[in-house]
Structure formats: C-alpha cells, structure tokens
Length: 118
Image (tube, rainbow, N blue to C red; front, side):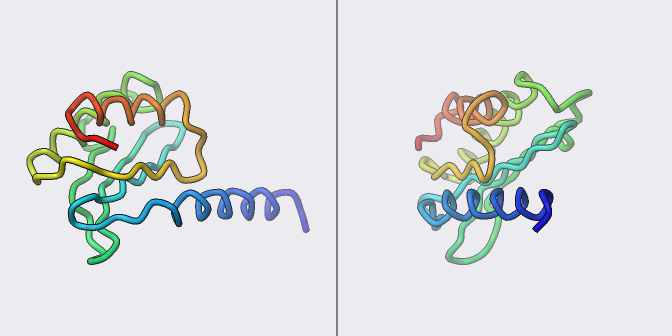
C-alpha cells in the first residue's frame, strides 16, 4: 500500500474513533470541524434526525483570511451565538482527525466564550 492510502486510512480511523464517542442529539448536538489551509468550517449536527442545527465558517463571515487562530476564534464565537439563538446550551466537540491545538482549540474556546458548554 502506498503512503497516501496509508495516511488517508489513518486519518479516517482517527476521525471515526473520535466520532463514535460523540453522538449528537437535539439537546446536545455534535460540533463537527473541518479546516483547510485557507478556511475553517464548523457545524452543529443532530445525528438522530440527521440535520444541521447551525453552521459558521470563515467563508460565511467573509473574513479576508480564515487560516489563522484569530479567524478560528471568530468562527467559534459566531457558532456559539447561532447556537444560543437555536436554544442549544450544550454540545459535544468532534475534532475529527485534527489535533486539539491551534485553530481547533481556538474555535472550541470561541464556542465556550459564547456560552455553549461541552
């Protein structure tokens, strides 16, 4: 197996390992995070009904550059604000295949700053 396939499999397994412990429902949705070099995206998902409760991204906020910690913090604060508008007080954090540091950590702190607990 070549290196690219092996790395993709490891990322997929890591994401599944995190995701199986964090299941979302209507009272406590799952916050799913995706990051690229240029942007960061986050959404709250109710896994029981299969719908997105709310979302925020550096694209939707029209930030000039979404690939830094400051942008991730702003996205987290916006996601927390939208969650409060939808009467969500608690959530589970699904970091996916990413480590909990840098932009992912800043996004989580931004959601917490807006008043959502996890």
